[in-house]
Image 1 (cartoon, rainbow, N blue to C red):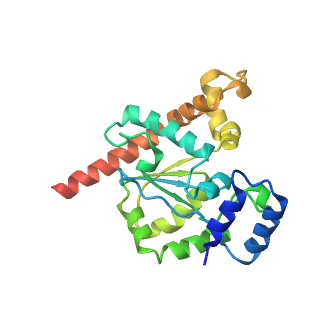
Image 2: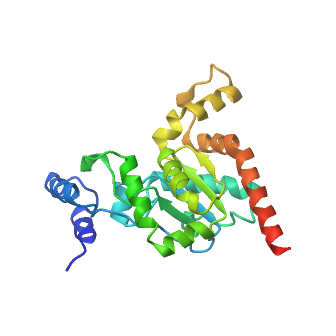
Length: 234
């Protein structure tokens, strides 16, 4: 029997514009959380964990988390991290690191559902994940943890009671969030002045400002983790 995710991926390629296929997906979606994309275990670095919101259209088509523009933005963020922490972030490929979502259920506008999961969906994902030994070990073994967006924060704060790990919270790495995040925009205004034209600041530059905004927290996390590791060795 054909896997239902794979069946619809074939129908949707190269992109889901067919109203008929979308309507079929909607009918299935109302009954089950069939359309999902699983987490990605780091291919080279298992010390770093990036938590995002949920898979979207591109992630569904490629059957891989963080595949679209958010993934490209994550790699920009990793490049900046590697400048100050080369021993930790030695690889620019996002899939070198652990990546999970607050919900594995696919969300995108054409499907008719919200673009982000609600809290009940996140609670359901947490309940499922707690039964997944491999995924829980992935979280447990991760040392440097980043939550991108409010949904990622909600997920990790609820599941972190099992681990008591520190983490760095950042805004969602989607272009819309990077352009509209109040905290980031306030920081940019403090740097460039009240009269700066926010609309002219490109995404790559905003990612750089996001890093600068969170740099002190990242340094604190790295220092804490390294101190803890040293204590364990002694």
